[in-house]
Length: 78
Image 1 (cartoon, rainbow, N blue to C red):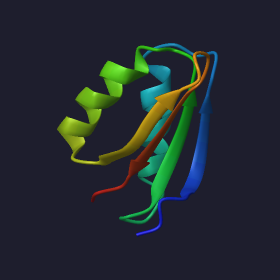
Image 2 (cartoon, rainbow, N blue to C red; image 1 turned 90 degrees about the horizontal axis):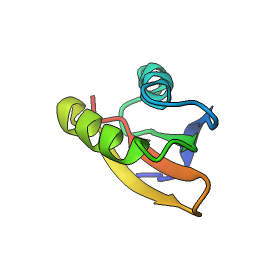
Image 3 (cartoon, one colour; image 1 turned 90 degrees about the vertical axis):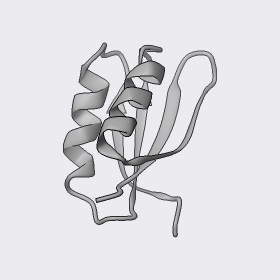
Image 4 (cartoon, helix red, strand yellow; image 1 turned 180 degrees about the vertical axis):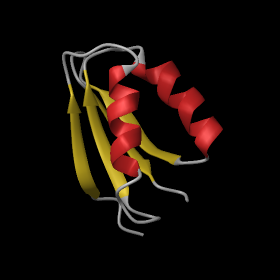
């Protein structure tokens, strides 16, 4: 499956729960197996995304940061 994002959600300079809300809204619009990338500056995204993905079964393909911006790729599961 392609790991390139279909949609990029720019949630930089927002705080919990806005990055998850924006990403969750967009993941509903892509096909199963496609990837949504979220960019965030709130480091609370790490635990929020872990909890959200466990509850929804969507796959966190990758998550990393450069000390300023977190980049997370999430593959739609269903």
